[in-house]
Amino acid sequence: MLNGIKPEKAIRAFEKAGGVVRKRGSGSHVVIKMPNGQLISIPDHGEIKSGLLQAAIRKAGLTTDEFLSFLRS
Image 1 (tube, rainbow, N blue to C red):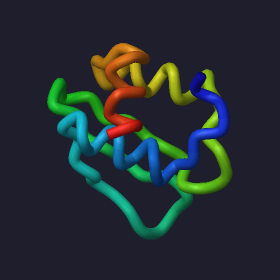
Image 2: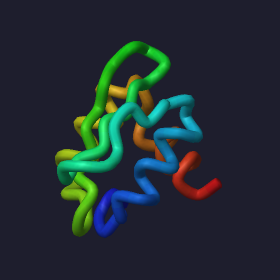
Image 3: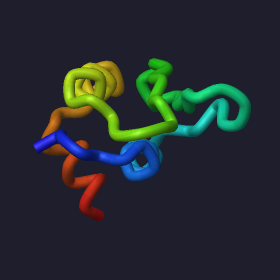
Image 4: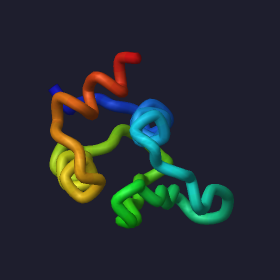
């Protein structure tokens, strides 16, 4: 379900959920500020491991189903 998701798609899904990219550029992580005030950090390389993605989804105040709907749209 959450396996094999590329960072670009996950970042785009968090943006659709109202997140704002705070840092992109140097370094290998992207920091996104979510509407609930939480900052989540997404690695910008390879595939995101499912446990890390699940933790980011929870921290962002989303359910897995909500995140997957943003991912598909």
